[in-house]
Image (cartoon, rainbow, N blue to C red; front, side):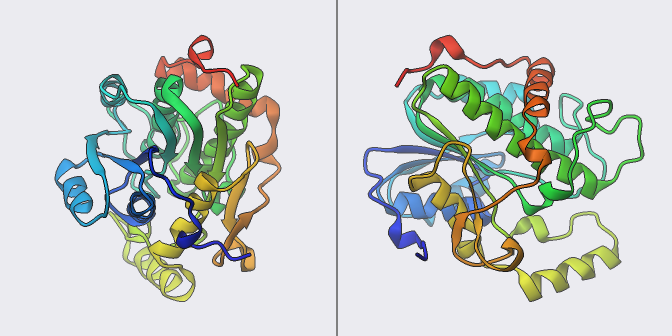
Amino acid sequence: MNFSASDIPSMTGCTVVVTGANSGIGRTSASALAAKGAHVVLAVRNLDKGRAAAAAMPGEVEVGELDLADLSSIRTFADGFSEPVDILINNAGVMIPPLTRTVDGFELQFGTNHLGHFALTNLLLPQIRNRVVTVSSNGHKIGSIDFDDLNWERRPYRPMAAYAQSKLANLLFTAELQRRLAEAGSPVLATAAHPGMAATNLLKPDGHGRARHLVMRMATALAAQSDDDGALPTLYAATTEMPGNGYAGPGGLLQGRGAPKLVGRSHRSKDVDVARRLWEVSEELTGVTFPQHSLRSA
C-alpha cells in the first residue's frame, strides 16, 4: 500500500512538537499534521523563519524558540512547555559542516543531531502521551560510535564520519528509549524514520569546497526526492500503527526514494550493549536522565 499525506488520520485534539520545522521535511511534516487538525508547535532556532513558515501553514500552529546546540535553550523550551504532547518529532539536524562546537563544547553534529534531541526527549517525556519519532539517515550504515572520542577532540575531523556517527546514535537512542519505556510500563512508543535522499536544506552546501558542492548538486538532481516525498516516512512513523523501535524509510531502490514502509537497519544500530552505553554517556554529557518515575503507565 502506498502511504501518502491523505492517509494521515484526523489529528484533532493532538499536540505535536516538530523540531527544525521552519524548512525541509520538518516544515512539510508540520504542515501536513496541522492540515489534519493537530495543534503543531514549530520548535525552531530562528523565530523569524519559524513565524514565516507558520504563516503559510493551515490550522493551529505556534512557534517556540529552541536551539538544540545549546542545553540551556533546550531546558528553557522544555520548562516553558506545560501542555501534554501527543507526538514529538525529533527532525532538526545539521549535515557535514566544517568542524564546529555547540555552546556546550560538543561537536556540532553529535551535539545537535543526537545529544540535543536526547536531552529534549527526556525533559518532555513525562508530558508525552503517544510517541517519539526520531529522524535518522541511510548514512547511519557507515557510522560507528567512537566512545574514546565522541566529540572529535583528538582525531582528525571528518565531516561525513561525524554525521554518520550522529545518525547511528539516533537509531541506538530510539532502541534504548523503547526498551526503557517498555520496562517502565509506558504506552509511549519510540520510532524512527529516514527520508531517503530528499532535496532539503541539508543537501545545500555550507562552507564546503567547490568539488563537494558540485557532487551534492548532481546527486540531488539525479536521485533526491522532494520535501513532500521525503517527509512521508516521518509522517508514516508518527501516525501509523508502527511497532516500538520500528524504522520507516522509502521502499524503493536502496531506500533512496519511494513510498514509505518498515525498513532494515545496520547491525551496529541493533547492538544492545552499545545502545545502553551510549545512553549512559549521553546522560553524563547532558546532565539529563530518563524520568522513569514521572512516566504514565499503560
